[in-house]
Image 1 (cartoon, rainbow, N blue to C red):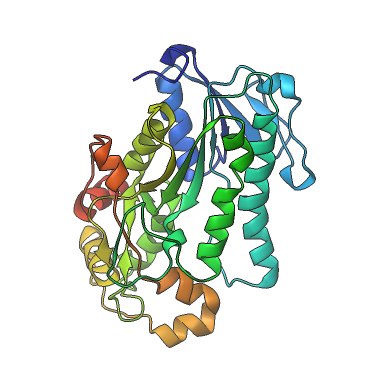
Image 2: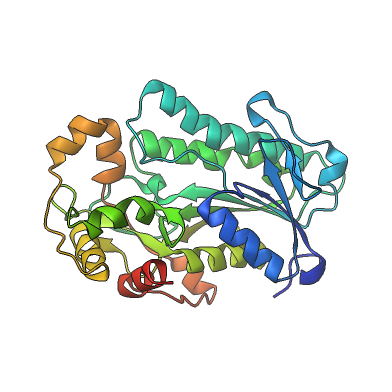
Length: 309
């Protein structure tokens, strides 16, 4: 499949969040397909393939350097589950998502030759705590701080959409990869036999392998019929207890030390209820409808690929 408006090997894609786990893997995949990647960075550019930006000050590279883009992929965002959600960290999460998305969407909309597509990160946190309800892309927004943040995050792309740019909202679940992300924190604990379910363990978790997350992003980039929300999740969500058990098996250790809900709330406050204990059973309806083939559809396969690459 070729990029819209251009043969694949002649495409030029702008990428933010290129230094993150998914960004690194995606950048590599794009280059392997002969696509020129321009990375948006916060530091001084190390070469012609890097463009400096400071979205907090509405500063972007001069428009001439953004002309002739085939598409843009926006993956920026502070880690949601890394610490307690203090007022200061909530501001950081908002600025790293909503502000950066708005600044980029406005800049793309003002170009003489805007790209055909903007593929922007979002999260299944949009759906909130929904128990065992099966959630495809038609499900309404949940309640709480994080669903509200996700809604504002997605709405920030509107300038691009109003300019005729096709916009896809990648509602990511937990990405399981070998070089960072959640497993970089979880696997060492589980290898020491310190893993266990969070709270009751009955809450549903959606997840996806890094390889499938990259492939789904590429599909969103290239498929002219895809726009709006896209659940980037594996077809087999699991309860937290099932996830914990499978990860213990993958590292050949028991995973029986529970983290009680009250302890998680004491340590993490609001974040515990909205990120660690919330039940979100998202499914990839639109990916499957588009013919997407998962390489690692089960946790057993995804853990094997991530932990024993």
